[in-house]
Length: 166
Image (cartoon, rainbow, N blue to C red; front, side, top):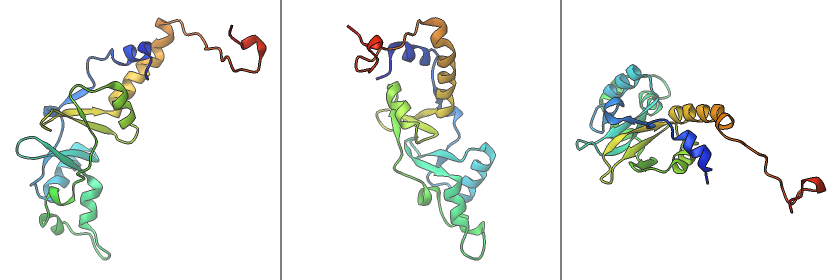
């Protein structure tokens, strides 16, 4: 459980959500050659993949695409024209609802650089990035003791009799 003083400081930022319209994405039917261009231009290593109704269907990474270009003897761009994003995208991805809990976001961002936010129908609403959370953590660690009195908790099980409570 996150303490109330810590949660309040972390959530002082208006929102962690980067809206869908500001997030580069691909359609599952796009050829891999197009995906390579998009990923190269936006300089992200992984981006969301949507269907025609803006439902999140997966994530595609630069390494997923590059792997398709290579074999034991050569690297070939021609191979990318033969496949679509749907052929290589990751489909088992962590998502969070629009009404997310901070604790859930923190746990999931340990293993992910961003989380896709979806509505109840799976429509993509945006992302919450580890970078945005870390900005809030930076703010919190600088403000916690400035705004609050923080006292050490005395351990009743401690071996030093001066530290025992009661």
